[in-house]
Length: 391
Figure 1 (cartoon, one colour):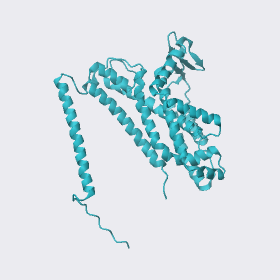
Figure 2 (cartoon, one colour):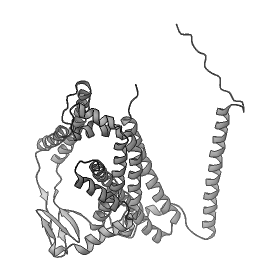
Figure 3 (cartoon, rainbow, N blue to C red):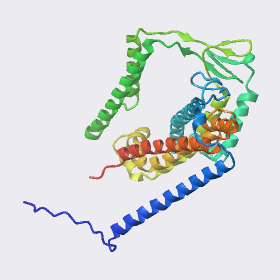
């Protein structure tokens, strides 16, 4: 029977390195707290002496300006906090969609750098060298000029089926919301859960038996089939609000403005070039013998990349990939240069109207700090989950 080891007593002596470290940390936190308190009180005092109003009470006042692009109705009579909320949703819309598209495009480009086809390798290399060496602001302006100057006017919009593309943006049909669509959403959620379970089971079976099953087509089929079944269970609503040419604009349907498209495409194209290099470096970090072993097992190049090389490369890819996601989110603040109403643009307008510079800048800082920390938290969780487990 193993004897119990008595717990070690804490050493509160100055000779203890742990105790000295604790004291130093407490002192450092105290110094930072005093510095923040001094700066805050000094700023508030100087603002009061100069007759400058301060505080966040202005958020309840009517904004007095309209916002050209929002996910819900807004006019000048609504309060400032709703304007900031619209800016936040516009920022998140660009950031989330951009991260998804950047991951897909950057991964394809990074994998394409290892293609046996010289043309594919050359195109991927040229893409990376072109777009990562041109400042992102210039790329945003380039895309904005493309949409606003080179595309035809609304009356001569390019038509592709139910789609309309013009200087006014991209117009497309949207479904008329009914209760049956909610059942379709539930079906998609159930399909996503089944796809995840199937992929986990397939990977375990591959590790145990070496028998390879579809890791993409079957999960995608489960996702879509469950969505269709949910939609059918809800009565299969099929009414759409389709766009049509009006006298001065494309009416009805949904639309994406030139500002949104320019910002989304510019950030995606720019960041994907860096993501491609991250993926390439991660794949190159995997020992060459791993690919040779996969070939010896009868796996082709695509299967080797999917099942052997990329899973091992994730431990190298994820940390710098997180940085690129954060850069994309923060670079969205450049939207003010092309007139997209993100949180920075809304804050600038509110600052000019109210004079509450400290408060408006604090809100913007809080938004980007929160989104960055949330992104880092999610990526760190995924990094821990994807780490190679030592035996």
